[in-house]
Image (cartoon, helix red, strand yellow):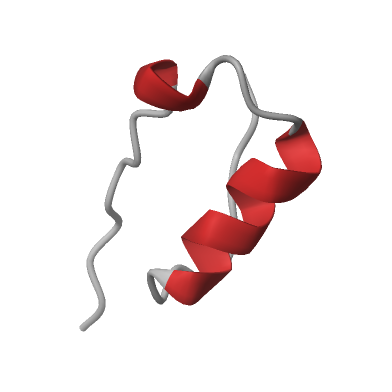
Length: 35
């Protein structure tokens, strides 16, 4: 069974969303939920 993980992006608040998505992909995340 897979588990959900939360990636806190506060430390990257100065980066464009596109760059944050690239970083998440490089870290092995399957996707992001924006809130």
